Length: 466
Image (cartoon, rainbow, N blue to C red; front, side, top):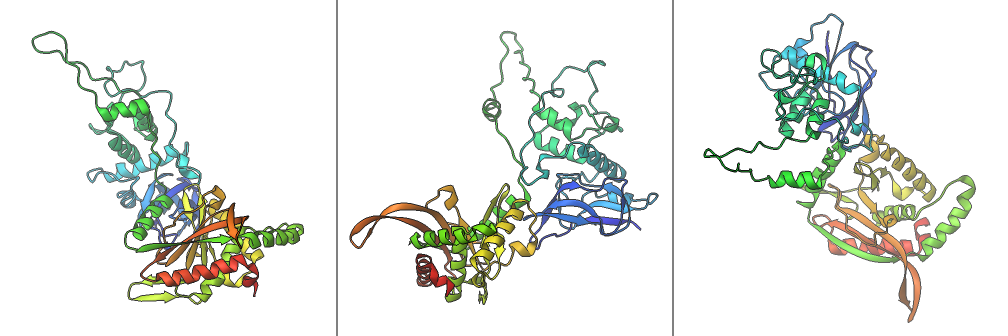
């Protein structure tokens, strides 16, 4: 019996997924539990496993395509089994494989398979986390929309009269052509049987468009020249690049909009003398050097934040409508910049862990975050977050709260500046931190008291060891 391959919810917040690559091709034998494909979710790249035995008979959405959770992206069946009923709705609402309702079911299934096969030879650039870069324009231009009738020796003719007047084109090619305003009847297909595929649309887009023919006035004289289109002129002279939005970037955009609009933010900034931390870090690293470990300033901050939050539970809380949830544990989310955006691995029970353990966990989680290999439980469940841009030379900034958390701490650079101490001007390493607070949960006095404890702990680090 045939088995539908669905786009599964591979993370708790996933609404759609992008197929990075298929690890099985059409015609490959499949056993339940085999890894079929790699899927880019809103947070990481996850593996999609087979839920049945047989042969992967149809790939309905090719690599690079996007599908809503629950939609069908492939079919597993026996070699002689009729799968036309499964391929009729190729993609089940997927943005990458949607077809007009009047398209015959067998043609839709065939084209989805052909396009997947065509794209397998040239995977899209965004298959890796560092991707999302647009392909460079092709040097060889496709026939222009207004070109003269093709000569028999000039190459393949446009596919406009194929299959009873219907242009033969893959679902992805149709979508790309519609987005670019390209008439498929003027595009030569390079796919099987003259079918138009993605590569043909890309070449048509990169080809110079023929200028409109000048029309002569009825009474003779000089022909009038149509006024140029300002948008097209700007695009032709200045150029631009469009980068497809990754699943992570879509989620970041949605989450930040959800946060900044309804959450009443207010901000508190304090300057901290980091002299003792710098001395302690130097001493600790000298001891750890033989074991290959090293403590960063950020590790001290995570430890101090964990201890301070336990002393100020109003700040270690979350807004849940009718109730405010105050946590008995501290899970600190540490923002990590990756190629596609931002992700926050979570240091669980940060108030109970030593500096070396925190340092090792941060390095290990950050490394896998950049590879997009984190599991959901490693980036979810934080009760408070930290964002550190000090290593980029940023002195001070404000961060946006990650709901339902009630606070986030923005860490600036530590720099040596002149300060007045006991009537004398001296040079001290100082760091500015800004706390973003959800005013529904944290009042100004509560946030100030938390920052006061944090400042005292960093200025006298032995306090976090007691």
